Image (tube, rainbow, N blue to C red; front, side, top):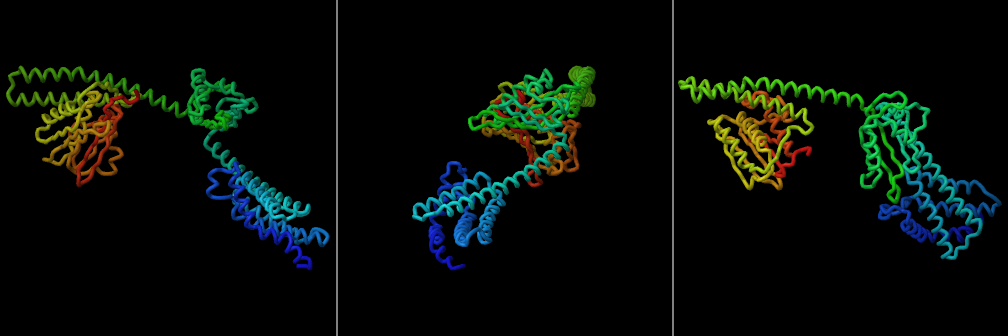
Length: 521
C-alpha cells in the first residue's frame, strides 16, 4: 500500500466498514418490506442474504481502489480487479437460478441502503465516490441480467426442442389462442389435422368452420365455459373436424387451459390436439358387434324358451297329475330341475349381454322394499335347494330402502350359491345384513380354502370358474354368478368386496346405498 493508503483507509472506506452492520440491517428491512416481494419469501429472508455482505465488502474495496487510482492519476489494474470481484458476486447470484426481478430489486435496495447510511452518518460522498457506487452496482445488476437471461433462453430452447420432439413423435398438435386479440396460432400438426394448408391464415372463425356442424355448438359452449373462473380454466373435449381443404372427417381429442389476468378475465388459451379417429372407429365397431351379439342372444334365448316352457309345463303336469311311481316322480323332478337350471342359464346370458351392450349395465327399477324380507325369501329357496348345507341368516337394524327386489334377490342368491359351492363339507354358510352409515352391507361367509391371490383380479370376470379345494362350482356352470352379482351392485351404485384367508375363510361383502338411485341416472 502506498503512502496515501492509510489516509484513505481512515477516511470514507474505514467509516463505511464500521457501518456494515447498519447497512445490512437496513438492506434486509428494505427488501422484506418491499410490497413487490413474494409473501412466501418474507419468513425465509432475502434471496441474496449470503452474497450481499461479501458484495458490500467488495464495494468498499472498489471505493478505496478508486480513491487510490484517482490519487495516482487514473484507472489502474487494482481498480479493474476490484470491479471484477463485484461482478463475480453477481454471476454467483445468477448461477443459483434467482428470479431476475427479485435479484435486481435486492441489488437496488443495497445501493439505496448504502447511500441512506452515508447520509445519516454524515459520510460525505464526492461525485467520484457516488459514481463508483452506482457504476459498481449497475455493473453487477447488468451482469445478473445477462447471466439469467442467457440461462433462461437456453432453458427455454431446450424445453422447446424437447416439446417439439415429443409432440412430433406422439402426433400431438399444439395451439395457442389469444382471447383478447382473437389471434389463433396452430402448429404444423394442428393444421394437418384440420385439413388446412400451411400458408392459410388461422382465425377463430376458421377454427369454427372446421368443426362438424353437429358438434359446433357443443365445442363453442366448452370454450365459453373454460373461460370462466368457476371452471378452473380446464378445457377437455372430443369432437369431429371436417378438413377445410380436403373434406376428410376426423375425430380429435383436445386438451387445454385458460389463463386469467388479475381481474379474472381470460387472456389466453394453450392446448394440444390429438387425432383419435382410429380409436373412435374401433369403439364404433365394437358397439356394433355388441349390438349384433345382443340381437343374436335375444333371438337365441327366445328360440330356447319355447321348448323349455313346454318341458317345464309337461314335467309339472306329470308331477301333479301323472299318478307316477316314486321313481318316475324323481325323474320328473330331475327334468323340472334341469329346466329351471337351463332357464337360469338363459337369464344369465341375457344379463351378460345387457351389461355389455347397455350404457349403464344391467337395468334396475328401484322401489321401496325391505331388504331383510328379500334376503329371507332368497335364503329360504336356497335352503330348500341345499338341505344338507346349514345357511344362517342374521339381520340387524332396519332393511328399509329403495331396491330392485328381483335383482337384489338374484345378487344374494348368486353370492350364497357361490359360498355353498366352495364351503368345506359339513360347514355352515353365514349371511349377515347390517347397516353402515347410509348403506346396508350384505356379508356372505364360508369356511374353506382361501382364494389364491392371483385369482383375485379375475374373480368377477364373466365365465370365471375359481377352483377351491379341488372342487368347482356346481351352480350355474358358466361362471357368471359373481359377475352378475357385481353388476347388480354397481347398478344400485354399490360395490362388492372380498376377503379370503386360510384362517378366517372367505367373505363377500356387498354394499348397497339405501337411496336406490340407479347408476347413470
